[in-house]
Image 1: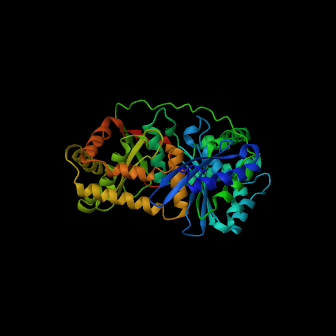
Image 2: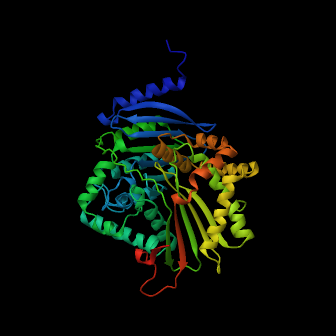
Image 3: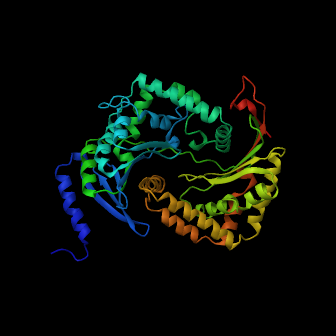
Amino acid sequence: MTDPRTSSSDVTRKAWLEEVNQNAPEGGRVRFVETLPFGKALTVDRYQLANGLNLLLVEDHEAPVVAYHTWFSVGSRHEQVGKTGLSHLFEHLMFNESENLPAGEFDRKMEEAGAEVNASTWLDWTQYSTALPKSQLLTAIPLEAERMARLVLKPPQLDSEKEVVANERRYRVEDDVDGAINELLWATAFTEHAYRWPTIGWMKDIENFTVEDCLGFYRTYYAPNNATVVVAGDVNPKEVLAAISQHYGSMPRSSVPLEDVRPEPPQTEERRLVIEKPTQTEKLVIGYKSPAFGDFDYPALSLLGEVLAGGRASRLYRRLVRELELASEVRISVGPFRDPSLLEIYASAREGHTAEELLTVIEEELARVKEEPVAQEEMDRALARNELALLASLETADGKASTLGFYETVLGQPAAAFDRLTLEQRVAQSDLRRVARRYFVDTQRTVLFVRAKEEEPDDVGDSDDSDAEAA
């Protein structure tokens, strides 16, 4: 007799899992782990293969499309001094040749299937995304499995991609004012933690990567027990699981090393630099030490950042841009990372004004939120903006997969986006004042004053430390 507490969907799932596992490779046997609510209408089913591959599946039949993402728990934080940029290099290498696909064949087959492919790397993770018609999902799965397990890593492929990445670094950092400033900010604010080096890596490291470096990295981190596959959209779960079991089940587990995290020591005095860059107007960048994404204070500090610089009605935009006309742009971001990072404030001065003028006004507004309660109207506006941003990100299957993969990789809680929104809704006026006092501390900040410098033929875009000096 069927247990009355068991739903018909559970009975159905058990039957087709048994069928899938009858023909599965040894490492491809699938087990159901849990079902989690994802908003009001959807759920997330978590499965795991015997070889450790994590799978998140969301059925959404509103449109005949599917998003297929692969998230690896490796980013620049997992690298070592002298080997920075490996995670980002692999974002490029993974679109190259594999044992059964000549160079360019992966992209060609995906394009024929009507798929859009992309990839990204950051401090804590690397992800590969594919959005495609539902009818082509079974075309994509073996292609994704192929490059995850059988990438070709030889000198010609490596040398070619190293040059591509070196050029990307020149364009995005060394010849880009904002990129160079951001890199210098993090390298100055952190002295021990791996967040101090850029995701793209230092140029010397990029140039010196060897095939042995890449093979070791690939065999260690591009393994099923270090990956999460996210499938969202108009799918048949049994069909998806059967295909993933067959194509990923023969992949061996790897011995992922225990991460050797070096906590950042407390910052006890302000770090201040004055730098010159080929920019038309002065800029100001401030980095305050901030909590990890999973910390209790993060929702309140994120909401406070929105109050201060979220949109044209925010406090800093209203004062700096509209009223005083000192700045053309101001923004705030709080690092969404596994470990404590930075709350960044960026402001670009209007012609004729200085970075010091911007700092004076910003400090006045930060002092206000430490002493005066933020109006409920401002809090409601900030909450509405955050809620709208979340809902907009979930409009597509690709957006759903991206959100699930991010929360799974950073928090281990794939459906936590709505929980985080609930936490923000519970933030009180006293919480905003508390986090302002805790994190907007002068001795725990790094400040960069960016002066305008005329471009010189031999100096264009130079981001060497020779153009920076302590204030």
